[in-house]
Image 1 (tube, rainbow, N blue to C red):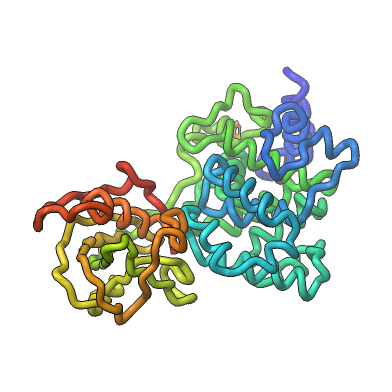
Image 2 (cartoon, rainbow, N blue to C red):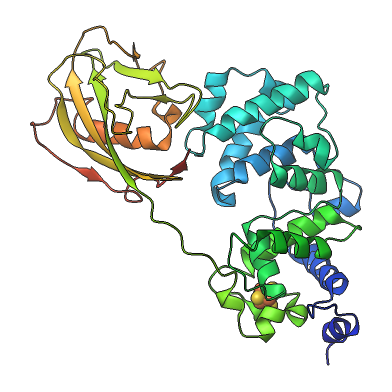
Length: 387
Ligand code: SF4
C-alpha cells in the first residue's frame, strides 16, 4: 500500500475521506504544478515571503467570473497597465473602463468593478479590507469573491467554492445530490478540506486541480494527487459527478437594431441606460427586444441586411440588423465618427451587428435590398454571455 493510501485509511471521517491528509497531498502537488497566472504569486515566491497584491487578486477574480482564464489574461494585463493601482482605476472615466471591458461580457460586473474601486479608494484609503465580512460590505462583492480575495490575498481560511471546486468536492466525497440543491452540502464539505495553514494556496490548488486534472468530462484520476482519498473514483462515479438538475429551456426573443450611416462615415450610437441589459455600454439603437417595440432613431429607407444571434443568461436573442443612409438628426443617440467611436468599445452583441453591417456594405456602397446574411453565434463571432 502506498504512503497516501496508508494516510487515507488512517484518519478517515464518516464520508470515508481524510480531509487533512487530502489537503496536504493537494498542497504538495500545487507546489510542483501550480499554473502561472499574471495575477498569481506562485508557491515558491509565496514561501519566500512575497505577498499577493489584493487589487490584482480582486481584479482577476471579478474578471474570471463566467469567463475563462485564457480570455481574461489579455484584459488583466491591459487593465493593470492602464490602472496599476486601485486608485488609478477609481479615477478612470466610466466610458473608458466600459470600453476596455467590452468583450468580457456580463457588463454589470464592470459597473460593480468601478463602484468597488471607488469605495476602496475613497472609503478605505486604497486598502482592501482583509476579512470576508469587510470585503462583503464593498459594492459588487458577493460571497465567492469575498472568500477568494480573503483566502488568496490575505491567507484567511475562507471557504472558496466555484464550479471547479464544486466538481472536485462532489467527486471526492461522492455527493450524488444534484446541483444546484447540493451547493450547501458541497460548501460544507469544502470547508472541511480547507486548512488553517496556507488556505490561499489551498484555494488556488483546488481551482487548478479542477481546471487541469479533475476536469468535467474526463477526470485524469490516474495522475490525481488526491486519488487515494477519492470516494467518487472508488465508486466508479467520478465522470458522472456532480449531477445536475435538468435546466428549463431558455426562451428566444427577437428584436431589431438600427445602424444609420452618414456620408462622412459617422454612425448613430447611443449609450445604454446604466441599469438593465448591456447597461452603460455603447451600442446601436434597438427596439427593446422585449416584444413591446420601439421606433427607429430616424426616418429613412431602412434595409434589413441579416440577423445576429446571441445568448444571454436567461434567453436567446435573434436580432435583425437594419441599415440606412441618412443625414437627419436622430431622435435617439448621436452621430459618432471613427475617431470618437472604436468598434472595440462595443459589447459582443453590438460588435456582431456592426460586423454584419460592415459586411453588408455600411462603410461602402449599400448592398441590394433583401441581401440577407446570418451571423450564427460562435461562427465568425464570439458567442458571448452577457447580462
Ligand atoms: S481521483 Fe479523479 S474524480 Fe477524484 S478528485 Fe481526482 S481526478 Fe477528481
